[in-house]
Image (cartoon, rainbow, N blue to C red):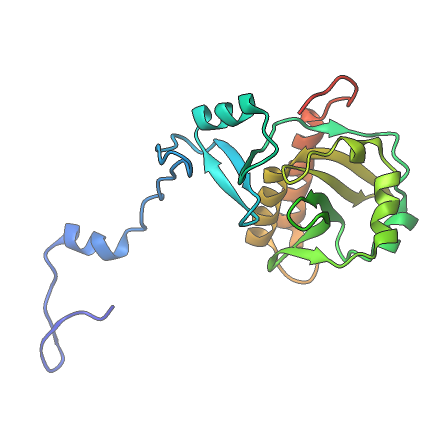
Length: 221
């Protein structure tokens, strides 16, 4: 924005420091609201819903999320994203299986989209979440290689894989943390391989997933 002029080459000063801050101070954080009841969401952490019609995540307050939880409905527009995180140390997805997937980075997540009635495979990239066009045989080999695939709840949970240091890690996670990872990688990605900052953030993310992950036996969404 150019300063207002009072004549050729002359500047008129604004109304003091407070007026200047209107234009130079960064905007405050946007207040988020529940997308069901419009209640303001306090803090940075809140529940999420999968909007199966628009294929996006929606923010939710705790009462609305609990209401959907109690209903146990698998119909309608919204599904509550659960919080469970499971591990499968005994899976049989090896590096050869990963190569057959043809995914160009070391992280991918898979979830079943009920609207499309098929598995969707995505991976983080500088452009955001990028879909991988897998042939049915390739993704079926992933599903057959881990018991977690049979536990996935469509639209709200994902199979998260990481190829790292000669082996593949396999987790069942809430779908919202997968998109959180995509956002973090997009923010920090530099150069061809992501750069040191992105790799460090990826290590921290998976350290948190490992700490949260539990044995699948007896687990419920």
